Amino acid sequence: MKTITLAELKQIYAIDSVEIHSHDSSIYTVRMHIDKQYYRLLEQNNKPYQRRSVEHVKKDLIDANANRHIGSLALIHQSAYDEMVGQPSREEANRLAVPLARS
Image: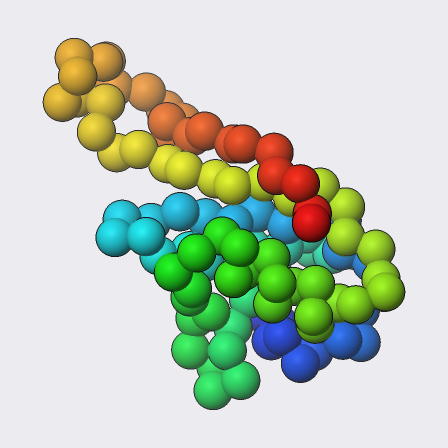
């Protein structure tokens, strides 16, 4: 998967979709779909972009991509705990996608 920083986002006119991935302990990372490619968002020092709130992520994206188009925005949560609640094994991850407002 390709990577992109917040500074590089300022050069992008349109982001097709943004996925804010929820991890345990309230850590959020970002994956974006731009021009038929997926990108993982990085900090300026090339470390993974991480924030402690969805609102902080949204603010960073809006600030970095001001006056440009952001398509769909969703909060993604994947659970690896199916076996703990008696669910059978599955080929695909147990994934919940919640659409978010951009503002």
